[in-house]
Image (cartoon, rainbow, N blue to C red; front, side, top):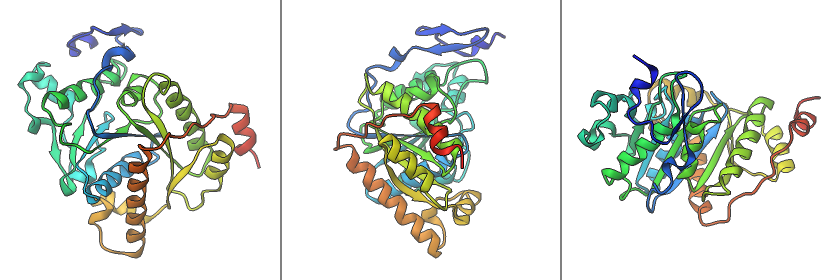
Length: 304
């Protein structure tokens, strides 16, 4: 079987080497998500985007919002702590019906998680054989066809890290605000700088704007704050490197389901504050930072 045999309709795709397809930006134009406020979460691979996204979705739900979280990573573990399990991906379920989406029902690919958060794992194509942008597009189409976006206040896209292809960019075509998760170190700040440049490029043709960054798994924020000052960016939350956050993942729970230890209560309050900040941000102009050159970042952060 050819790698392309698993992809039902190559209209809108261009070849990019043997067994690879890439999606045009125009593929999803017009697939707006209605009145929901849409947030895309980005950051370096392994920085804690899924943990941030899930606790953020939980916080939004506790503020009385109807929330949908969409995981955009082949690992399909974005909603793990919301549902307590790994759920099947949209792309895998579509394969089961030979890519006939009309045969699917919402309960086939949507799982209700903590406090009513609706959870979807888009998944991704096999490594080296396709573009994640196609998967995101098909997921949004399914959600619209089943009218699941009409009763939603907040959509959170949890986007895979370290990728700058259609899989990275597709959620930006739907998002109101992009949130970047970083740590207080050179590598994750360098990745953040590249993500800022990518979002700014998308903002030319789409409504997406930058909301700010979260300093995650970091005792200090001095390096993040130094970058933000130089790039005219903004840190809007700080999550220290807490063992309780690691334990919540092991227990398949959000922080809002953990015992009321002092550090857990503090982290919950920070996530609630972040949700409130993001909700307000959609009524504001959005940030317009200036990404730094590589030389500038190395001079700013790369040396003692």
